[in-house]
Amino acid sequence: MPNHTYKKIDLVGSSTASITDAIESAIARAHRTTRNLEWFEVEEVRGSIFEGKVAQYQVVMKVGFRIEDPS
Image (cartoon, rainbow, N blue to C red; front, side, top):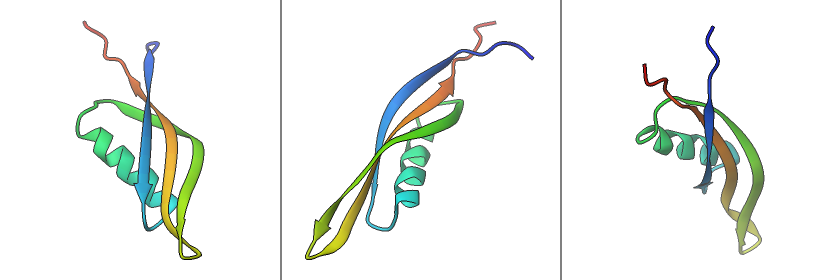
């Protein structure tokens, strides 16, 4: 198995439904323009409140993708 090199990008996903949905929607969107996505790490979870209820979830995360070998 060859050695791999990865690059990390920052993403912020949001959802009115759940933290999981915020993560999954951000990754799905990044997948449209970035190849070789392989892992993510959640760094921060926050949200907004409206009339005493959670209005939106927001997740700050790093997503790693493998840099392709030029050969």
